[in-house]
Length: 148
Image (cartoon, rainbow, N blue to C red):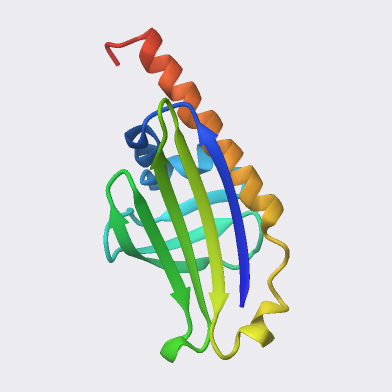
């Protein structure tokens, strides 16, 4: 099993964060690892991710969606031989939210395929920092221009 995580405190609401992470076309604006996402983010929807990390596109399914709280993307091989599970979690704090990103690779073939997965920690850090900047910039723009 291989696991990567990153988290960040964001000045904004759970809804602000949710709106950003569930807007598939918006990822290329704030996520430095993402070139584009094909598809729309909804429960049981299929997405194709085009990243800067690989020439290969990644196909994932949105397997869990709890508004303003939790989203899970899954991918892998039949019969669970190799599986990747990416979890996005939003936890409200007093005046901010804690955002946690985790991806776990598992399955009987994970020792073999896990060796081919590079260290994703730097890209996870870029993701959470990009998300933080996007939400906080958007929150301040909304506060300055409430008519938006």
